[in-house]
Length: 377
Image (cartoon, rainbow, N blue to C red; front, side, top):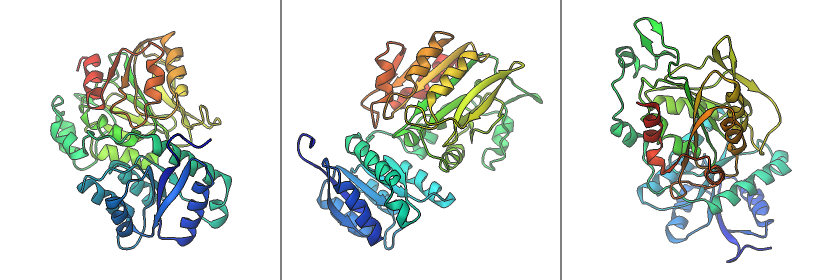
């Protein structure tokens, strides 16, 4: 059945004639979509986006004359709204460029196939159609803050002297200190956050606002494939006072540190001898995603933490809901959900809100404030 109101209009931007043809064939194979226009670089795409409106834009990154990143910057500068998804290569540079694209307003991304056979395969077809489907339904964040604005507005408690001396040199330790001894989490609390579509940009409005002397650790599950979460963690670490890292097997959870689940792995917490550590699992996808936030929340039920501050941000689906429901039966929870207006996709926050377990529903710009208030910071 064709969607009400006719087919969704898509713009495909890629310098490869082969990839343009393959992408167009895949998109046009779905009766809900129609490729309205194509462009071979950012210059052509900008001209089209200036004069036309599209329900979604599939954008390559590396192109002559004007790259995908340059196009996003131009659109932002000229306040031209577009629901953009990136076609990204799975390389270190590709991952870094993808994170930058998400910062600039791209809604989501798909991994660009490495060869013709992969491009014609079902995995790429399904990923492209699913991502375009989400993009056509997404709400662009119109009031989200840029990283530099976030840093200017950070009125968090004073950074410790040790942090001050190294914050610019990226030599920060993984602990906060009193004297010379590491401080264990004394509050008995931990923050556990889940997000998906729109999450990378939303995290920029949350994590950089956390104070350097955050008294608890923070766990983050952002739905992403392997190869991209390390770049996401590094980028957030660059603009934050807390330490942000991609979680590794055996990491000890320390206050003032944010641990992002690695793409392609499920993350759990295990308490051994009173110490909470990260455990990574290679189980199949759950809720259609890997990492899955439900694993994280469920594992915290057996941890030594006596209260979990659960945060659910923008995202497709309902990941996190079952995990929080299970956790709430075993631990004291305080649940904060992003509101519909500030969510790119109001799926995950809506799902947890409908359970009645949510303590607060607030806009993105208030998430960190509510977390810190609950912590007494």
